[in-house]
Image (cartoon, rainbow, N blue to C red; front, side):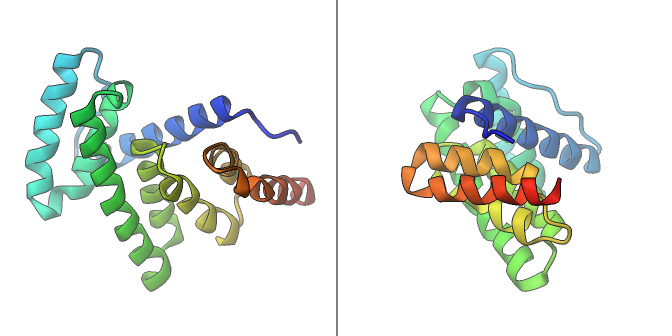
Length: 170
């Protein structure tokens, strides 16, 4: 198997995050709809800010923020997305390392990477539950490894490792 390009990997990361956000919103009785205009993006942003203020609605807010994935280039939206991603990483770490819930942790890591794909930590965080989970999911890990190597070339060895795992499974 050949590694995808960084651009293909970013697309896969975004798709995983949108899928995760869709599932999380459905769990709260809401429908995922990608913002199509800046006006819609700012309306979603205001909704997200209100949800973040209510701790029990944080995951819903994080999932809703992914609706703005086409507008993460706008500074205010990018800042909120990054901040939410960092909080998600903390929650995911607690789930993964303290509670052993690799499945839910992976969802939160995937959403964090989608919200803040320029953040090396957010992108690399999804690797552990993919590679150490039961069962291991190296094909899901591959775009995260490739994009992490794109962000920081010192992680190229991770791509080779994931590709080897994929070859071993097949």
